[in-house]
Image 1 (tube, one colour):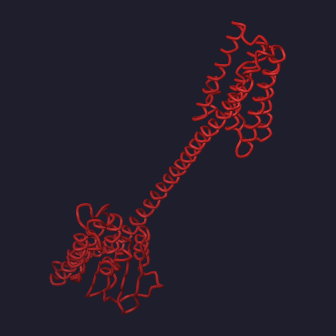
Image 2 (tube, helix red, strand yellow; image 1 turned 120 degrees about the vertical axis):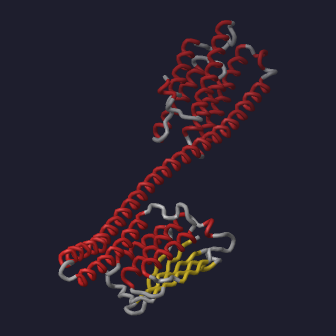
Image 3 (cartoon, helix red, strand yellow; image 1 turned 180 degrees about the vertical axis):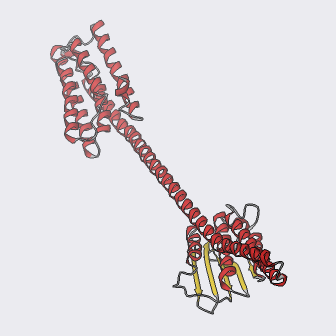
Length: 416
């Protein structure tokens, strides 16, 4: 029984309980009529009425919801049971049975069909009352004549008002129920989409981390590994000729010192790149200044820095999204790394400011006077692609203007 009740979910379960209450009232009316010989003028069969009421209640535990033919057969069965119980069994409180029929009809049907079935229920209820009035009047004419109009009017009025109220109440309940179902489905779909998006973001982050590690490993192998190999050869040569040619051995040692210093710089640069959150304890302004100082120590280039982080209505240094800050920092770091390794530049200009206060966009410009390169050649392609990916990840764009012997200008634009 409990499993069947669960098939009519909230708020339809409330309607099921209402049906049980009304059926209980009808059954008590039957018991009362049989015990005190009420309505003895009508042809009655109380045992058959109880059976019909039991069947009528059982079929209400499961309502058809999809197939139109099933809905018609179900409603016809309900009406047939009520008519048999009314005319053959003489069941009392027939209007309550039709109210239950109207309640179920509101759940089963939609649109004009719902009103047609409700109208038919009102008509059958009125017809039943008229038929019983004619029977009583035929048996005892004086017992009903004076109250005939009042009884008919009261029956029609009560049933009509009940039907209208039932339609409005059930419509409101059904609309709320459907809204909750749609909201629940939308929430489930949103949760699934969020889970998929989080999964994709993790995959992209893992892929980006793997690419970054591979690049750093390749750089360490190409630069630090090569420098240490040459340094080892120089030291071995210096040891071998130290007794026979001290001057040449000294030159080997001086070159070894230079190679060791360069290798140390490369290692520090790689460690700085590997940091997960480079701005964990720094503002964007302090982070960029730190990168400029690192570039100056590594290459003796003193970058010209211009920062304007004050927007139209707020301070960007305080309100800029963390992911955009990190993207700006990493792009600047990558650009400085390329300048240090490949550009042979003597001047570097870096500018960060609000491009257009109306469109709320932030612009990063890094300009050097190095040897430049052909954009269609993949000599530094990984670094440029990494910068483009970082800009695109936060909704920005990156443009590179360069040519051989014409320097390089990197322009990145970010939404704020």
